[in-house]
View 1 (cartoon, helix red, strand yellow):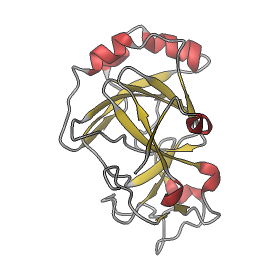
View 2 (cartoon, rainbow, N blue to C red):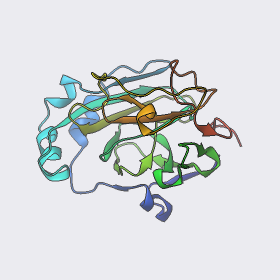
View 3 (cartoon, rainbow, N blue to C red):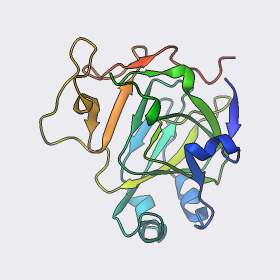
View 4 (cartoon, helix red, strand yellow):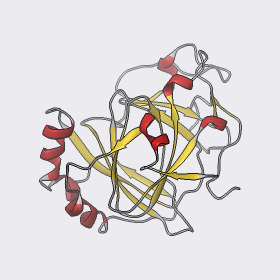
Length: 214
């Protein structure tokens, strides 16, 4: 799979590189977080949130909205699913990491999406990117089995368990967008080969993309 750089013009429709914030202290702290064989996501981590950058991102990047800082670490080379939020997500790479991205505007009326439209981008170690709310994304991927550590910044409360009742996918179909909601502020479209929880809407068509596949 071709991997472009986040400095490539092709990345501009998915997000932007953040260059007006110093992320060095956050990158250093990420080195203290676990690096599992699989993929681990924690939406809010005190070790990261006690840094001054949390307030800076809240004020400067999110316009005084409250934010949370967690991480997504591990080893991964597969697409498996795509998700989106109603707000931008900031990813800060402590190691080289690859993001597989798509556009929400390419999701069909029945909420299916063709994985052939996905593009891959390298986020070099020490780089922070804003992933727009209109961008489909999921867990990062690593290169050559080295693993990845990526800080994830989102509006406070995102990706926590739902409290209310919501629609479910029936016979592989979603009657409306509510059937895609799997956590607070998280709409998910899964692949049938993604190993996802029962009840996940499996609307990704085409290959379950692998980063190492030519």
